Image: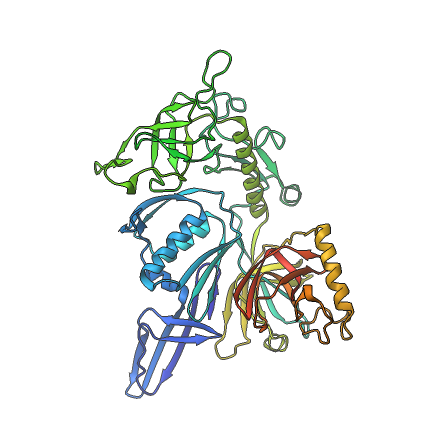
Length: 556
């Protein structure tokens, strides 16, 4: 079995048989609890009348996405185009993928959900003859996220996350009983190694006098007037290595909302919009530039279309747009069909205009955040580690691995002592505890949580109630078990169940309480923490944490 983060997930089988074996497209097997299907004709070689050799590749159900074409969906719900542009945030594209999967596989068979991926970034993507798997991979690349696949009896769920996987509370090193046979380190790539970053945004929506006549958005002046930042630790280790990066999707912008329609199909009202016609003391326009400003719709029937602003009414906040005619002579907004007209609630941004300083400051702040993330990623040499593990150690510890998981690796001779992510898992089908892992040097950095006084009080009440039980002690409080001889605690319901959580972003628990219990999440210090709770049914629940979490989940 070979699994690679965001890429391959296959089972390869090689075998001989004395008789012909009938295997074909659509056949499947179940390996380590996951379903794998044959999507390409197996390779068959005949040596004699009683000796046949087969090479078969089984693919996980994620490859079912490659069987579904990504088609655009117009406002009438008709699937009409395989070649299109689409503007939107991460949710726009995940919903499009889900809609296409529903078209082929039926309702409620596939779900594409978003767990914590920011929705403030908006991009314009083009698609041509793509399938849904290609679209999913494009989505992950554009929004810097990853996906996880979970299969249930009647539904398959793809969850988009900033980072897939969890944390394995295990460390590997050389030595008897320490789990590591051999360790190989290679350089994945040093081409992008950067210790000083010059970061610039786009050139749109900047006034003529912006930051000493800069043609591009710059980092906040408090950070660096020449728009650069250093990673001091990396500079100390590698010296100054400069790189210039343009983040063309970041520029001052205000997302407005259509609050009413005008007297014609070319007009709409935004009651909250600033006065585009404002002038300075000399009568010069504050916001209009030498080029015509445009409205670009982000949602609605006209999402992805740009229209030149013909006029703006200061009193009512009414925009008048020039009509747009495409290469097929189709007019937008279209007077003959509501499928291509503006609607109340549509989101839009104004382009080619100088925006008020508030929006410039916000854009510079976004650029700073993106630049910091970029420099953090590329200010170290990208290293790959290949680990061959001790089968007995894996068996004794009852460990299994998934791509995205983090594990500890220690080797004094090679200077390694850190948590490193698994990017490839290779597992033997016969000797199921025989693993080879490929790791990348991305170090986990969990965020600290601070409880409020209210949650501290609630926790104290919970602990005080538990102390009154004869079989409860601090020593066994973290062990998953029912607390017996429960006192009369109406506020904590009729049962108390707790589970350990070891550095996970999500945890699904089968609790068998026969109801939807209240859920408390406690960190290692006993502080109550915030988490999203999803009840799958009356006997199971999924808890999604804000970041990688260690502590316990308590059901009441």
